[in-house]
Amino acid sequence: MKILDRYLMTEMAWPFLFGLCTFTLLFFSAETLMGVARMVVESKAGFSVVIEYLYCRLPYVLVLTFPMSILLSALMAYGRLSGDSELVALKAGGIGFFRIFVPGLAFCTLVAGISLWMNDAWVPPSMKRAYDILIEHQRGDELERALITTPRVLSNGQEQMIYAHSLNVKEKTMRGVFIHFFWESMRLREIYAHEARWNGKVWEMKDIKSAEFTREGDVRYELAGKRGWTALSPEESPPEPDVLRRRKLRPEEMTRAELAESLASMSIPQDGDDDRLRKRNRYLVMYHQKLSLPLTCMVFGTFAIPLGIRPHRTSTSIGLGLSLLFILLYYVLMTVGMILGETGTLPPWAAAWLPNTLFGLVGLALVVEASRK
Image (tube, rainbow, N blue to C red; front, side, top):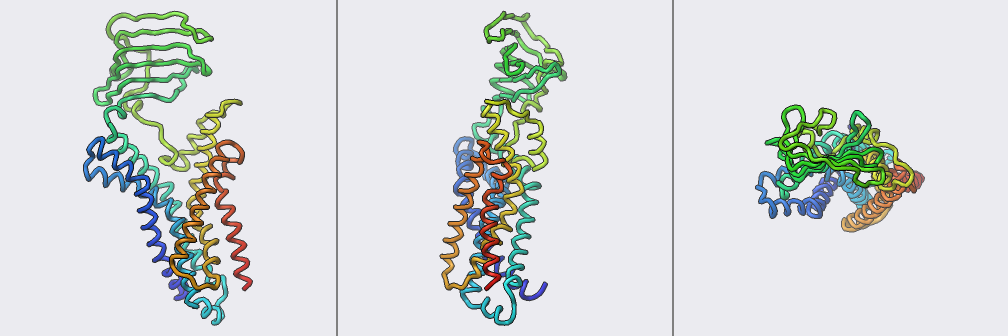
């Protein structure tokens, strides 16, 4: 690495670290510490639990703050070099714009690569653990044991959904159990039991009751089973307790490949099913954001470096103010893109890349303009 490359990248590194620390603290204070406060107040979580929770949230916050820090770094570093006439001296020595621009862009590309790796390898397991900690320590008994499952398809084509007032995984029991059977969103049958226990193969229900329904949703007939324990058939029995306890992962808890699998398993919504359509579109936007968000570092570099190189003499506070303005604009565009993608106004991929596209086009125009001077 030549001296000029090392010098320019070092100039960017220090404001980048400053921005990373500042924006990370802001994110923690605005969002994460609210969850910590609830944990401490509601479940009296210990210091070690709080530290583990903050550590698990850190990778997700870093991925969000990397682009902000890059923007601040490029504006401050190249703004200082321009303000102190160091860039004028370099150009007087025969060094062109692109020779000054490329080391900064290389630094942005390095950070983008780290962010891309973190977003797919470190963030999902860390966020999963963070949510588990939050659930366990916010009124843990109620939230951990209450159960509502998403529909699962049985071998006969029917869908089964389970509700239980409480699930005790350790004792392998449920209380207040309702098992619903559907066919094409039409309720067919319902089984109720005051208590259920897992016998190692299937669930046994105590004092079972069942009802069947007509196509109109009226009760066709009701049956009360024999007193005592009744074992469900293997085809109708819910999964074992450990499987029931697994909650549905959020998009930020999944890798890009896992999110793609989740999307593939979602049926294409019928016309008029707006809620399912919006959910699928939201997942598609987040799938594309898994790639677009880390690459924002390169987009911001392309945008901010030529902006910082422009001849001016400004203070550090101006660079910080411009950074905050552009960051706000970026996240407004990202929010607008999410809304347009969810509603189907824009294709999900276009909605995810909307902020990068706009900032990238402006950045390319600034690069072309700066290279001609």
